[in-house]
Length: 139
Image 1 (cartoon, rainbow, N blue to C red):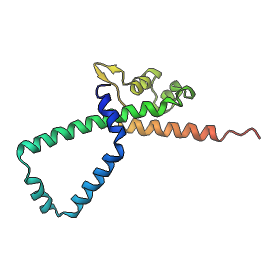
Image 2: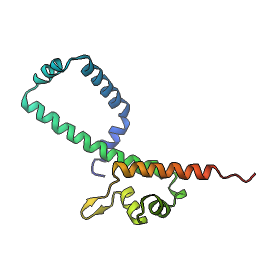
Image 3: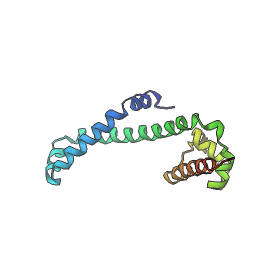
Image 4: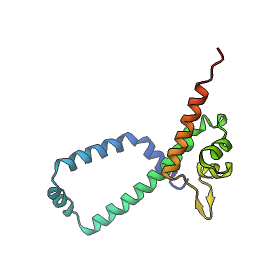
């Protein structure tokens, strides 16, 4: 993984990030739009550019973190899942298609990723399978 060290650090400090976001939103919410603009205008253009770069890097890290978490979440149940069935039934795709996205395999030079809609479908599939298997009763 390109940012494995950063992602690990991010995972370890996820709670801190959420607390920081909540605190920032609280402060931002306590200011009027005009006050927030004044607060933000105190930063130099160079600082704003650096903040934008950090924001882009953070978004990239969060994307990689999400992909890492998907693989980690599936690790324990992977032997129980039939990806061929899930790919065909819920996506009308091949087993290779779903494996490429789970493993971030490069396709046409870019890592394959689930879109947000595909992630929702995948989550629905897992819940649906859980519901079906949970309804099995022998007595």
